[in-house]
Amino acid sequence: MRREGRGQKLGVVVNPVAGLGGAVGLKGTDGPETLARAVALGAVPAAGLRCALALRALLPLADRIEVLVPPGAMGEEAALAAGLRPRILAGLPPPVGDGTDTRRAAARLLAEQVDLLLFAGGDGTARDVVAVLGTGVPILGVPTGVKMHSAVFGTSPRAAGQTAARLLGGEPGIRLREAEVMDLDEAALRQGRVGASLYGIARVPHARGLVQACKAGARPDDEAALDALARVIARDWPADRLMILGCGTTTRRIKRAMGFEGTLLGVDVALGGRLIAADANEAQLLRLLERAGAGGAGIVASVTGGQGFLFGRGNQQISAEVIRRVGRDDIMVVTGAAKLATLDPALLHVDTGDAGVDAMLAGYMKIHTAPGQRMVMRVGAAA
Image (cartoon, rainbow, N blue to C red; front, side):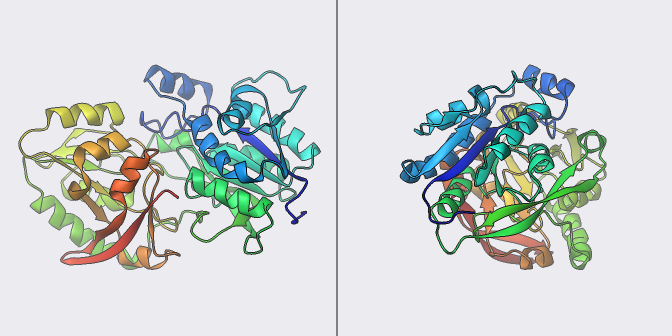
């Protein structure tokens, strides 16, 4: 790869439907039926806007790099919105609305010998990109999907853009590393089963704190402490206060301690120890908050292992507006101490898509790790 920062080529691909299933609780948008359902539920596209946010970091290099994009919503619109003057790839077939579009665009950019492919999407989009490029061209993901377990994404759109700018600008501190492209079976997820598979290895520019690691599972060292903590939370939570329970195995312990199974990778709501809304989406959560009584509401959330995300990865149903209405002081974070100890850097991330809410969440926060035990960690707003 040419590292002098001149004559570099940046390829950009946007999956316009990435992330549509998040806020409406569909855990992804793979397949035409799920996409149609997401649209029917009122999902709003955001991939192009988040890609434009990333691309703005490239403006200082605008006269030193060439930006190549597919037409329309697959790249052109985002680049123009960022203030760049891209070269539009001619001759691509009209989009068909599935992964074929991404693979065709990636193949054209490979032929154009781009030095970096910046894509906006989730794990499914990463799969399509790496299926074409392999390790031949470095890639970097702008996080816009629901599932982002792969180690190829920036910690936020801005972080992805900053990393791309540093690489293409020839900054010596940026290196390329091999990273896993993982994905989950969405159909199995909707039935409460988790099955992750490795789909490829990509070369990714790495900048500490700006590019996320691969998601890691729960650690056995934490299990007894978290089971005991779940029982305490279930016992002591006020009966008149809504409990919004986030995704994952840690919060599932609390659900089981209250006597119901709940949704493994969805958001559930309890009141008085009873499940009142299973696998709730953003709209349902907002309606419940409007009707909340004198006891108010609180959010119980966990942290993604290996990545350190608190909000913005897989739990988009707990949207910026939901967080704003609940308030920072009424968020309880529950995570095992061993999981926290593996984070590098020792920082929790939030990427809600709302800069104001991210800033509200930033700062130091108490993390419950066992009955009577807490750790204090810094929460960083999306870069």
